[in-house]
Image (tube, rainbow, N blue to C red; front, side, top):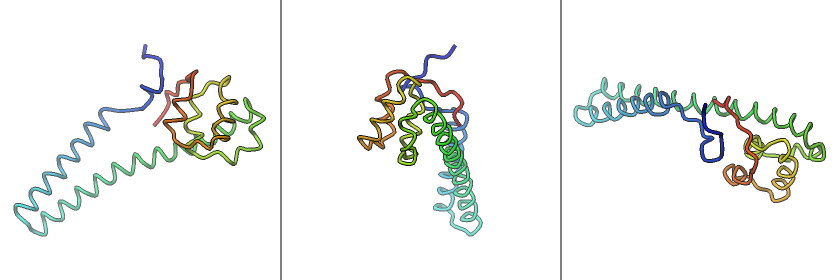
Length: 143
């Protein structure tokens, strides 16, 4: 069984993707750059540009997945706030994506007061909000 999720261990890292895949792509990019510097030619330059493009595809694929995840979290949190914090419901439009994505880790019991505090203090830093959570609700289905 995995350790209980908390602020310290909640970040999702997939070693095969984050380290192995990106490591290979970075090594290939450096290798192609070395070849272009040592023996410039149009073919070598095109290979370097391809290496840059593949690295960018991998990077943007991750960014796009996280953006979709944030949109789903925004919807989920709006619904959750309607249910567990009806006093905050009239102010749902005031929440930023950073606030909602951070608040998702708060338990239902803690969420209403924390949501009101985040709005009142205009907190928008994800780490700062997550650190305020005392009763952590695990999210194990992240991208």
